[in-house]
Structures are given as structure tokens and as C-alpha cells.
Length: 108
Image (cartoon, rainbow, N blue to C red; front, side, top):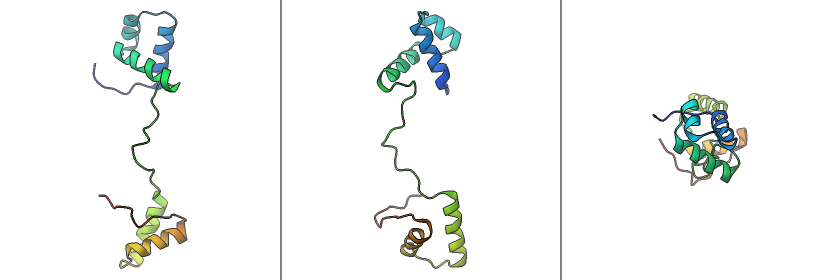
């Protein structure tokens, strides 16, 4: 079977069927999932209480620049293209209550 997105509802259904005594192969055939997926969902459910793992805390910080703020920044640079980054940091703090430290690295 190929990798595909399987909804939490289908995963929960598979576990309910398994817990109610259905044969593994019957569940796999009926729902078109693999046996290893059922065991993995069971382990995840036992550990987290849900069939989906919570997001990893190691995947980075949430983005604090929303599209509204980004549009404001674009308007700022249209009106004054010579604005330096330290001035932008101050402007974000004053106008949008967003504090950005000096040590933040810029990635492309």
C-alpha cells in the first residue's frame, strides 16, 4: 500500500473494530489499511489518548508575522525603502506589539 492520509475517524474506527473482536485481516480488508498501521495507531492511542500523535515541540516556533503585519511591513518599505532592520524591529514593537530580539536569524 502507498502512503496516504488516513483520517483520525478511520483510525479510531479501526481500533474500535479491533477492540470489539474483529479479525485484523478483516479490518485491513474492509478499511484498506495495513496491519502495521493498526498496531501503530494502537501504540499511539495508548501513549497519547488519541490516534494521532501531537505535533512535535521540536518543529520550531510559531510564526508571529501574520499576513496583516506583513502587508503593513510592505507598505512601510514602499513609503520608506531605506528603513533599516533595527528600525523595523522598533516599528513592529510600537505598532504591532511584536518584540523581535536582535539575535533572531533571517532565513530564506
